[in-house]
Length: 256
Image 1 (cartoon, one colour):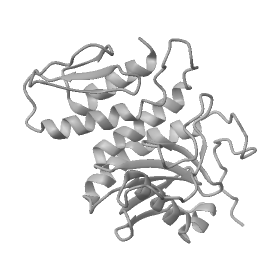
Image 2 (cartoon, helix red, strand yellow):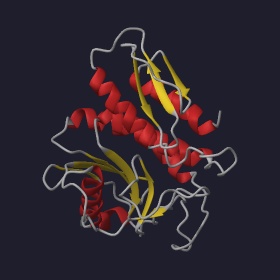
Image 3 (cartoon, rainbow, N blue to C red):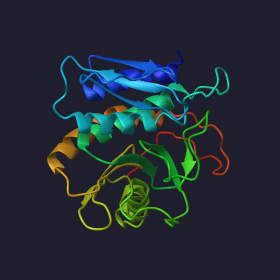
Image 4 (cartoon, rainbow, N blue to C red):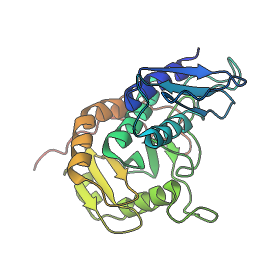
């Protein structure tokens, strides 16, 4: 079994609190055990989560499983050996952002910086960035702001609106000067929360309704150290189309 599926199953067990999780073959029936929830991957295989007792929040567990599996469709191999696996650090960052969404009850989480139009990582990148993460690097350009054909309150629309809003903040000027930025926006198409780290980066959580600010703050603060280490460890590969935009620690300017 490939490592992407192994990570997915571990994430399903952790985030859903399942006693076990396994892969179903394309022709295997999930059955109707009330202790189990399942869904299909894009390649026809399925993922089944099993609990010790029938979950009281079955619908919520089902939806969370669908969200978790959908994020892995882009990296699950259609045929053995058909793709190179992504670097461990990029996969780890992706999983950390997905888990952060779960803990904060956000619909998306992504990493941007104050110096370039690049998304360094996203929990749910589909429709938000111009292309899926490359095998050798997670860096992707932001997608053009064309929401034609998308539902007004869809994840992609709200995520794009959040990126556009954050890019327009005057606070980014202070971030470039080494200041810390922590901001909550309750208005607009989707409420959001943003925290800066490592001088130029921002982790942004997007919501589709008013949210529990204390819960979201706790989730970000608890994850921020791990996120920072992962972002700073990203390999500066595939420089096109943004030559020299590798992740690196920025030195603070000397005081004069």
